[in-house]
Length: 193
Image (cartoon, rainbow, N blue to C red; front, top):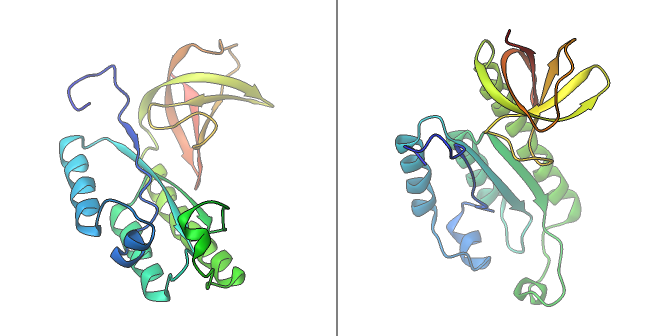
């Protein structure tokens, strides 16, 4: 991935949590130390990589300390993309036999707090891209914008790149654009002549 230009510099690693207590309860096969080492290694070997993850909060037994540990991990790691969801019982899974002891309002509050943190991190990541030129593929047209995606974004999951261009662009084709503005979860660009 580091050496091959044909491979997108993007990985989705579903960490789900970082507290060793939670990882063990979730029956994950990695530890906090291993997750931290993996992220450090990826960032060192592929400096321009975009990392995406999904986090699960409110799993049975999750304490406020476990959740704070998760927030600190996200703060340190500065994932380019992150999704979060609250635990809900799924019939037939091992966790369905556990007591769902985290109240629904606590779960929702934790999702909100985590996504608020990610919003500020994402904004910082996106603002660093302003002025950068990048190759994008055009996915669609919506209103006044062509919707594109860079190598750092998965279709229908991650942020969009909104391109203002009077020129008719072809869906499925690649173009070079310059990033002109950024918000938390989208980038704005213009076509490079």
